[in-house]
Amino acid sequence: MAEAGAGGVRFVKNKYWVVRHGKSIPNQIGLIVSSMENGKLEQYKLAPEGIKQAELAGESFLKVLKEDNIPLENVRICYSPFSRTTHTAQVVASVLDISFEGPQCLVLDDLRERFFGPSYELKSHDKYPDIWALDEKDPFMQPEGGESVADVVSRLTNALIKMESQFQGCMVLVVSHGDPLQIFQTILNAAKDYKGSCENDLTSRIQAVKIPSVLSQHRNFALQTGELRSVV
Image (cartoon, rainbow, N blue to C red):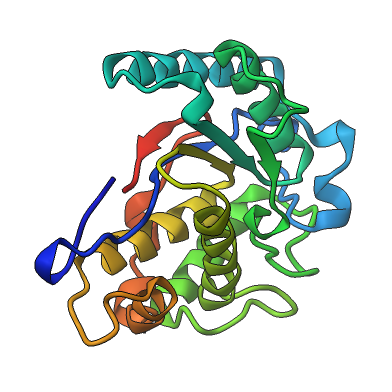
């Protein structure tokens, strides 16, 4: 587990890895699908290439577990309810030989895709740079009708607190989407290095680093589809 702060204060109880969903049908056709209503539709699950990416991610994760002598019973998979992330989590669980319907796999609504707003929903991927330019300018500003970076931080904090309360000493794989995982890495990396009066409290740590100069840099943590990465 990662440790941070004076006197070796434990930062989190678990080890966290992330994987972005494999290449999805929306990725393949260049479509933004960010609302819960659309995101859960079966027609927007993984493309054949994405299934292969998810299998490779699962194999890579299994290799890490074996190298670190981590038993499968200590693994947890937490995933977004969207069809493309659920599909990815199912494939990874199958590779690891973990029951997807069992207690080791948990769906968390707060890991869902960032909602970019009605003016972007079901529109071309070409519009993403407009959102990221806004994020860099002011990560507290919402795209019209959508979520700001700061909004996503709030619900990711809820997800992290839930995982920390339910698991201890586990290897947790978070299966989510590009923007949420960029933001998740951003806040955890900043919180890990934070030293201040509230460093013993996870929520307070994240709140302390929830500032424009930190959040505006989330694109530095971009992931390719199916990419697996250690966080803390």
